[in-house]
Image 1 (cartoon, rainbow, N blue to C red):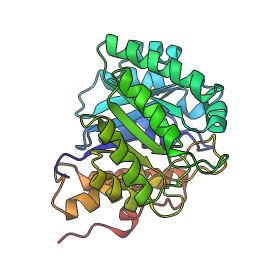
Image 2 (image 1 turned 180 degrees about the vertical axis):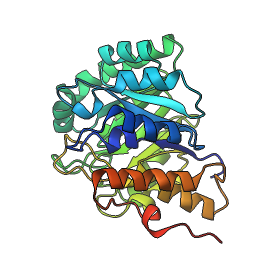
Image 3 (image 1 turned 60 degrees about the vertical axis):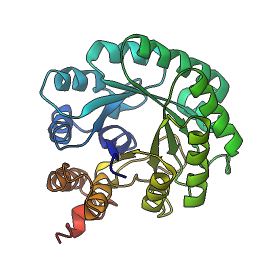
Image 4 (image 1 turned 90 degrees about the vertical axis):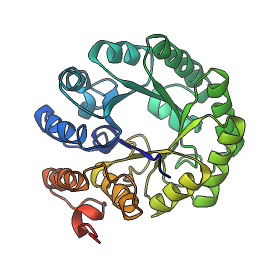
Length: 298
């Protein structure tokens, strides 16, 4: 647990399902703080059509501004296709995140492609990013279940993982898009990935739909995952699912780690300030706990 990495995805996964479009300057205010708070990675946005996801319409501009400023976190961006990669390379993305849904229905709604076609294109795009000298993370979305299809066979998830590994892509994330994961399942799947390749770097992305998000994170840690994607104040969810449920809150995870003597380098007070600012902007109570309850200081 000493090597745990935190990937803040609030500016992308947190905002994408919101009806209110956050002004670019407000996003920059949050992002500048997050990118210098001690977090390892911050996901600035996704390269999608602005008319489809207005919240992400300024992603290119955000990268151009932030990449020219001092920051300690790696700035990541989500791309869905070759055009997204081209845009990302042009504006300063430092880590490319790409994914394939294990749910055929979710894949069609999210990308307009079935799983098999999406996987072929994503692998090719990821390899192009590597050729350009950029680090890449590839994910399996809906890895633990789907609101449209229900149970997703673990063999289907591992087949996608195996294709990634065969293509030389070893930075692999499993995303619980619908929030259906439970700890025993989490341990099985991450354990299976590391059985396929002990050198794989495993990332976990859990939504807290049914209150198991934090339990699933600790199960993933026990299984060997070292990187965790979380969102400020617990905001977020995929807009292409039936219910966009929140993520595990970044400040909640960091607080838990610091209680165990880990990641004291991350400025938890700053994360709490950002979470409260986000909640104030949307004028509603958000699901994260620590930004409301405060920090246990002993």
